[in-house]
Image 1: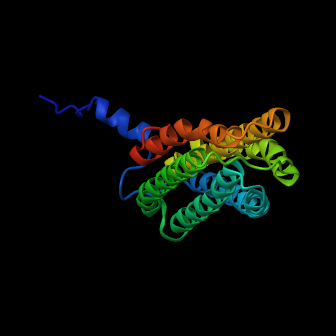
Image 2: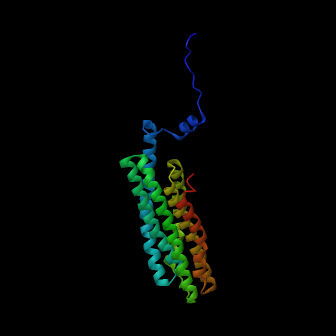
Image 3: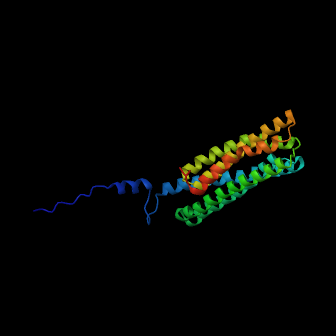
Amino acid sequence: MDDAPATIEPTLQDHCCAAAGPTAGTSPAPALRAERAALIGRAFRLEYATLGWMAIEATVAIVAGLRARSVALGAFGIDSVIEIASALVLIWRLNVELRRGEAFGEQAERLAGRLAGGLLFALAASVVIMAAFRLAARAGASFSWPGLAVTLAAMPVMYLLARRKIAVADALGSRAMRADAMESITCFYLSLVVVIGLAVQAVTGAWWVDAATSLGVVWFLVREGREAWTGTCCC
């Protein structure tokens, strides 16, 4: 009886492995490596743009917040500082992958996701503490034209940065970069809250408006921080 060549039916595991990409010990195709390198280059440019804008935003918001005794502007300035820290974390994570390969980049990814989530929690806590202090002291804030200008300018800048970061994060499969994009979205909403608060304050003159409006974004901060920390928002 002739020995017929055995045929091996592909298993479900084979299909899953093929869909997941190259297995351990194999190198991705040069075209895939080039495509990922291009995506990483885009990510670097977005993070450097974030650093440049946030340096301006943080300076103006913090100085204006101190002069006006505004919790909302102070929170906005702190958010900008945290955005700077988050951008630096992302730059470190991308450099790890470029130097040591995608496997090491994935290890840095987990740590970067935790750090980004922790930064969001820190921002939420700082907003609550400052707002509670101002409400307890029944202390209002002065209207700030520089604060209004920087928060108005931040909305379109943060919107564009967030959209582009999300697109690159999805292409890279980067939880940390998506968390960084969520921080840009948070900055957009926080700037909107500050603008509304400044407008209401200018019209009504109510002392509690500044502290109350600064609390409007806390729920969003906690939710996104939890997703970044646990990695439930990676896709």
